[in-house]
Image 1: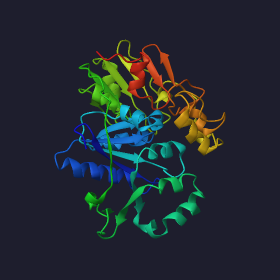
Image 2: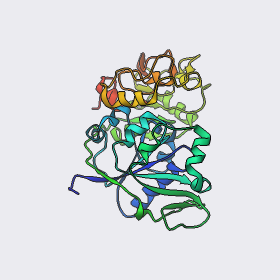
Image 3: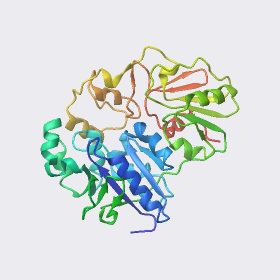
Image 4: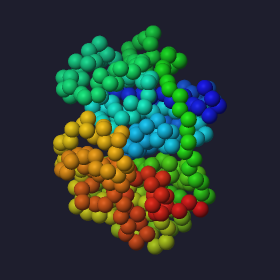
Length: 341
């Protein structure tokens, strides 16, 4: 392996099998060896980033466009790390997850102990046939069994959340190419937000999910940039708008009422194999999903899942940038909404 290439450990499965727990234990395992670890997630990062930040992990989001090819993927890998882990959810049924899986030859499949002996039948019973099952298992797949009552001979996570036999996990090699700009401007944040902001603004103050304390600081306006992150409270409202600092809002409901969520209203209509093909072959920004389909929420310039119907991916209210979805700061820089000085 050349000096610029690094190991990447892909952890993939369905939800509820223990991927995030395993990924953080693997990060802790390598960190204990003095290695610096970057934890990657495609799409799912918007729900898990707070957990990673609370555990002092370096977290990065991998966009849909990175799945086009390994060259595209490496452009989104941050430089400066020794090891990379990547969680991929719904690996057998999502065209986005499948397109990421296709980049790797070695994958670690996370399966809970209670279903390990009946894994395929369990999936068929819960979801029916999944289109990417065979492609996934055509690779070199290493199982990781989670929630085990005792230590197994293969990689496993036991009931007291200890990772065993990590040296048996399989990996690929990649060459990271992404270098984020740095700024010494003052930034504050709350809730779930793309953690790349923390790379860009190393002095960022995160208020976790304490919106009350954040709001007190927010009103003082003694900072340069504020980030209002997402949370599960869709009834929260902010009446205050800062006059000077720049604000990025990932929870549009605090300023916009009566928004309708995509995920609660739209079915999957588009053929999943067709979406997979379009991700691989069509230019970024072209149509991926049919109208009135869940995947129509990806039909925008960046192939970013939009959270709410009828709201632009990015909109501006005075000095507040409203992000309707997990709009990465790299895109905000590219489009001129965020200037790093």
